[in-house]
Image (cartoon, rainbow, N blue to C red; front, side, top):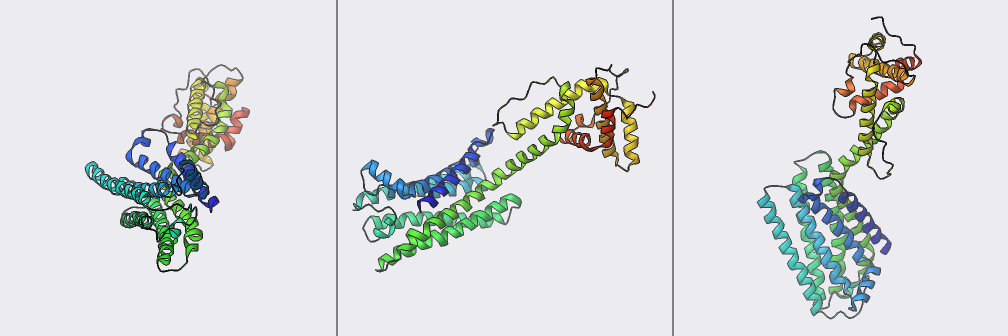
Length: 391
């Protein structure tokens, strides 16, 4: 059981790390902070609930079963954080959100205090690391503490399920997918954790032994439920960022061919050799460097080469935009060839503006790079076989 619980804690901790490392001021907004808090507390719950952790806490404090109120208190805080996260996620006026968050904090703070007080009043001198809920199900104080933490968790899942179900009808895309994952996690938590715990405890009250439900069945299902909920919270926030990084990696690679052809003309500073630089930063550096190289090659642009390549591309059946970019790629290749050979710049200068410099972002450079890599007109320009038309 310890391996499963620690694995769930590790996955949640990694999710928290990804969320926490997000750049920009967005990390400080209430939604981002509540998301990080919920995922971090979820990881802490599983770390605290593992038998080795419970044993270490009991030994360090010198109080048998002190890990129980600690775990139940953290679990209650986790339940509260889920409610707060949904409140911030759902949004509304600042006053309404603040009032709802205040109510949730007050309710679960009282719950945590009650858990600690009941544990202090109870007689629980026998250390139980895996079956405390059922072993002390009939013990005054402990009995109420166990039921109280379960009810607090059930209340949080009830609020979550109602809010998610209502909200899922109003949204689409990744947000709806995330809400469905949360609802699946809540359902699994209700069936796999809460129902099994309630059943095992109630069985003890009636003189039966169904401890296996609490000690064997509940922990892995609770771990899976928490992971599903965490995926539901993380997916809408991280998926766009991951997609953007993936797109940046693709554009960075596509621009590689164009960069190899013009890098000798660039005067931009060398790229920092840091492996942890994000793909967007790498792409931005390459984009700026290529623009710098194209600016240096501008005096070598030959309109005759471009016009002849444009006519050839149109004859091949290319559309107007594709023909223009192919012709520009041929002109850039010819300019790079002559500049590298030490030729004299074009006189008079062309003054032509590339499509890649007219549009924002990297789309123009990507189009130019693709033509630079595959167009036979570029090959001809590199070999000097695409000649300028007479002026």
